[in-house]
Image (cartoon, rainbow over all chains, first blue to last red; front, side, top):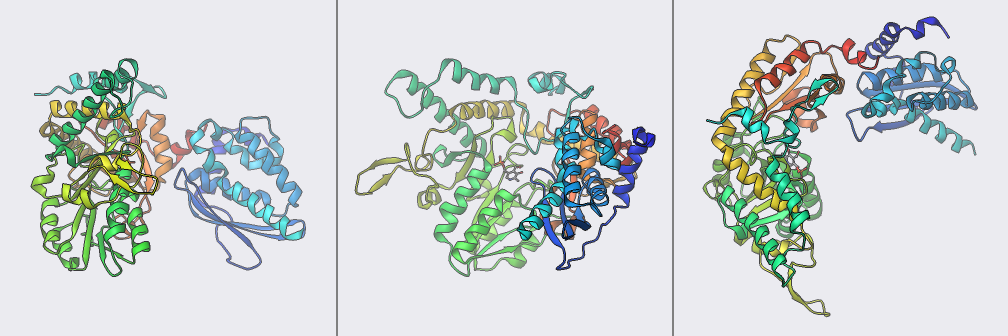
Length: 149
Length: 410
Ligand SMILES: Cc1ncc(COP(=O)(O)O)c(C=O)c1O
């Protein structure tokens, strides 16, 4: 793993950048996308996530809505990580991310910039913020697989 | 003259607790308040020395607890200036407001009737009325708030017609902390035959309330926001209104007799509303809370909150990056944002400095007209807070930046 991703200062800047300039932060409202509304019951975060799949591939992921730094940045990084992956790869990354948030051993290489959220799990009340977008995408992934059955 | 240091000694939660290495600074009193030792003792005493059901036994212990329970009712009646038979114990302000909506509103409202409310209500005072409107065909209309978010008599007059059957609003709002002109509104509402429901959850703990003088028809409030235990609240209703209001629940304790053909003879108010075993220890604790507040004195409470509030607001106004939404409010609620920082991020950062404030979203309408934002921070003061605690908040706000809010995770 890049040494840079071990530097707390860099990790803070990653979160900051993704919060101030979130990636894939516009919805298409297109029929080609599946979409889900995620509103946290315990905090203010309220976002929509869209994803487009082609057979086994994640073609595009987008989001929009009102969310805190952690909610926004973690979702932004998630979209970047998912686009271009196979569904199977996507599921593996999501599983590793949840392990990290849960304080278990995880594969840093797979998570890339998402390692910036390695300490969020220590503040239990913010775990929902760090996973809201990921959970949303996971729902879309499940939905896409149901369609193919 | 009251001494705040003396007062603080009465509250175990204020005995020097630390949070994240800092003294705990609790500024979320609109959510719930701390309890003095006397309240805690009353609750514990019930469980250690007085346990038994109220209204149920033929033995001395039960009679004693029943008397203590009824003495609690009398204390509430004295506090708000009504008769004890007009005091119903509920589970809290939400329970009280639902009881009025379902037991009175749903029974008497008809299609085309108007329920007047405001866009600054707590969910517990508007959602039940949505349901009543849906079921009866009555419509909810809103009294426009002025540019500061206040409910004014002038605006009330503009929307008051003889179609209005219920007027329901918070006499102190939990978002902006303004005091509504209750007496004038009751007078005008009564002229068109409407009933006035006052959500007093943020009022009764902070200002003297007199239901007779203000001529309030129904008043709801919670014990836990006024130094009392959770699980108990009050609905006051004028007796003649309580007589024609249906209970929300039926069961043991609320009926005088019934037979297997389904004939039920309900007890008189307030007992017909209190089916099932109530939160006895909470009523006993609430009684102590009332005594405590009366000992401190509402004159002092109001004055102290105003001093604290004026101080905090003036300090916050010195900070360029703080947006204040209710600089001119009447009570201890200070609603604000830190420029460019999401409310929840700021609350998490303040927590790392030992400071408890609330971040939250507000009803869509009020945000557009008055707040122009969907999320805010709220610091809410009570008489036991100190100027030093206000300083701690202001100091922490000086370093509340997006960078530092992210920094708490490293
Ligand atoms: C104005 C107002 N009304 C009603 C309530 C509901 O009180 P409770 O949760 O105790 O039922 C609250 C509590 O936050 C409030 O502030």
